[in-house]
Length: 214
Image (cartoon, rainbow, N blue to C red; front, side, top):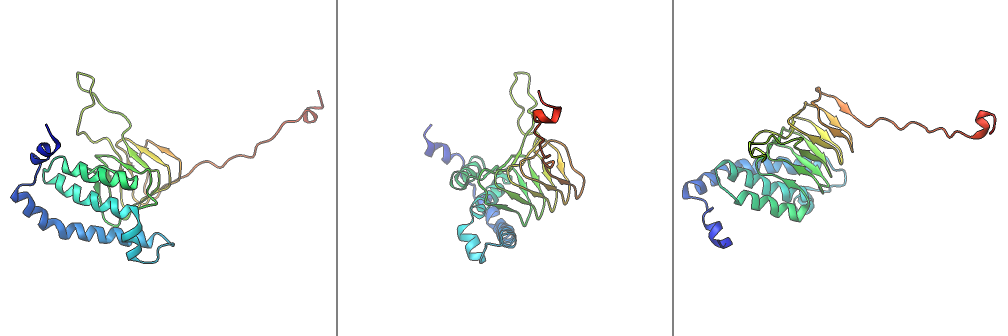
């Protein structure tokens, strides 16, 4: 089957098109909050116009928020095309099935992965390289991963996740949690919890004279 024939089977019906138009105001509202979150969270930002025109997170979120609405309306294929276009341009990989609240932002953005069944609350900020992924895949009788089951993290409101942190499985990162960079998280957190790397201990070099010579 040619691509054009495949796409022809995925076009919006008139009813879907009308419903999508009605949802544009909601999409626009969410994107306005995303722009505000990006601006407020970056001391280098000079204005909203810079955020809209230059920040890769906005490109990724425009495509994601449109794609997510289409997916919830039952539209096939097109939502994945939209998010993969943004992925190729920005390095930010957001599955259209993920649920993301308002005032969401990703600083820098490159290398972020947000899985299909993620649920993200309001006022959440991620940094570059963050992965919100699955820990394991239950399999069917043929050994293939079972599709559609919740397997990605839930991030409640006001969560911050710093660069290159990896959060795996259907766990809950509670409201107000801060997760430091380069951490591997597979268990739920308590509200307001802060996860950081242990401080490096000062090493002590043992010399022969410390033991009275050799």
